[in-house]
Length: 378
Image (cartoon, rainbow, N blue to C red; front, side, top):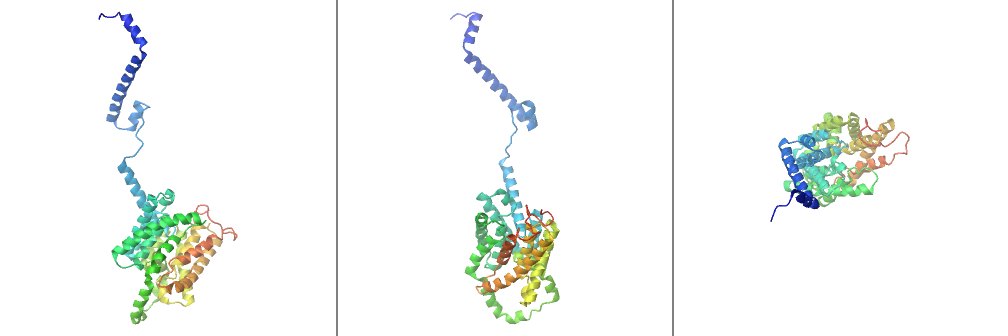
């Protein structure tokens, strides 16, 4: 109970280094706290760096911002998927295609967009390859499912939506399996597998043939003019999306031209070649004018133009694939028609696979290292 001399107090403090360390720590915490308060008032990563190198700017985006970016990416991927039906990896081309479909058949355009969104969202939810997702390659089969559901399914809107949603959700899973099973592009195999599974049960063309027999006199009275024949290649291109409209076909050609002018030539030339094969085969002229003989040929020609380096041999193969696809369509449609179902794009898938396997067998015919378009393939 009496004061210690100054020297004695200093000796006690020096002997208790822990007390000094604690005081130093408290002072450090206090100054850091004040510095952080000052940083918040200045608002900005530059201020943080000026005040102290130990204060890092925030790197994580806010949750709302992340959701906005994800939604934007999903929308772009779904839009690209509409273009990827005909090998166009472009948001702008996808938008033009959607508008063209909406002009020809608004309900079908809505189902195609819905199928694309469902397939794209499903692939993202189950964690499939993100680059493939961004390019729209998980979604294009879903878009075609929507088109088929709109045309061949029941007229009930709830049925259309339900069948599109269920069918489109399956396509990316099936595509992922095919990716591991085959060493070539998957074309539209997934779409054919899912759609034909449903159509074999409903057999929609049998119902159409019965109604056609009832109205046979009206159908016989329908005249086909030169203009209808000349428009058949455009109808053939629109029939890729199961739409019969020369204006829709012209819009799809325009979308292709925006992406690649030479690929647009492949599309139009392939469809015209398929229609010509139908004419020479003496088939029903009404089927030709509807574009049924053109769509598989257009797809096959575009596939050759997309995956092979542009050359004279490639152009010959493109024309040959169009002829072969039309001939195969005639055979398959006769066979599948007996069961009341369309052959969809099976002729295209078969011919495109055969063409792809010709790489290395014919001089001058070479697959592109990074397939894009005739202008950019090397």
